[in-house]
Length: 87
Image 1 (cartoon, rainbow, N blue to C red):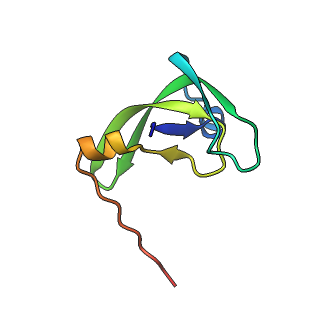
Image 2 (image 1 turned 90 degrees about the horizontal axis):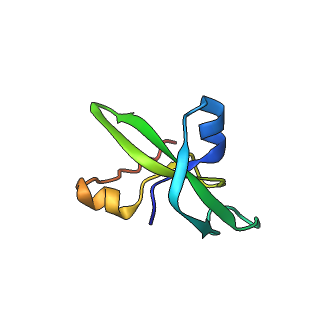
């Protein structure tokens, strides 16, 4: 799995991009949509509580969310996700 960021998110925040060193097709992030050609990367810094990190993400059109961190990122940093349901 790749680290992905939404093309719409990148465009809205006017984040700088660079050409992808190895462009590829991606087709699982949009429902009923065409295959995406991933040809850009973007460095993004994000903050979760006191944790700050900068990563390079592949830029893709997607319906699922704005930032997806792949398993290599999770395992390299021993991250865990907690889901909190509020009623």
